[in-house]
Figure 1 (tube, rainbow, N blue to C red):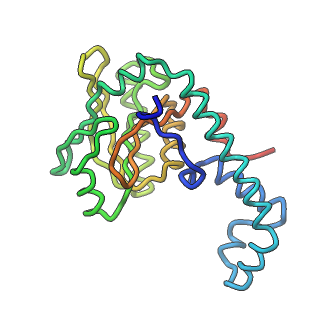
Figure 2 (cartoon, rainbow, N blue to C red):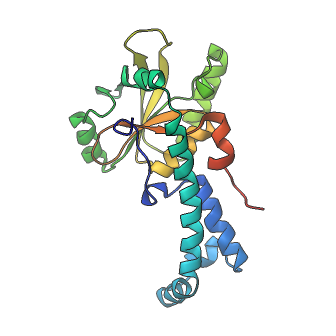
Length: 228
């Protein structure tokens, strides 16, 4: 199972919504804001890190471990049938002159070329269709997908249109996006925002793997915006 699924490292979780919220929270507890940090000169930043760096690091490490533990628990309950469904799916890209297929744990030379051309080094293959793996109406699915596209367009993130198509044709084809440049943490947050059970993600090695994101149930963990 672990050969096909990816467990994020602490470093991978940069940009994850919960980690961003935890960072903001710990700063606030010590009387700082993110803007304060941005305005510090080098000497002030060194003093800040020397004084509070360890406390901040411990807090963020705790939050990252919670996320990793959740993904590991989801992996323990991940059925062989669902795994096989992901393995027997072609993740197709056909947009703006790019036409290629991604498959789980198969290195993609085409994706590597796309990385080099765009000077980016990650790929997230995601759909907003059928949250929680439950078939939604076409109208609802189209609305979810429009929201996903709008969220990327607002942030000017590079993506290519595609689709996920199973080999056995038992599950409807899902319009999808191949997004370049998201950190693993950002990709997990985006998937959780749209209630997805999992995404396909590739690091700089261009080897796609499955990351479990918990669906709607995982939103309380991944999308926490404020600590009480």
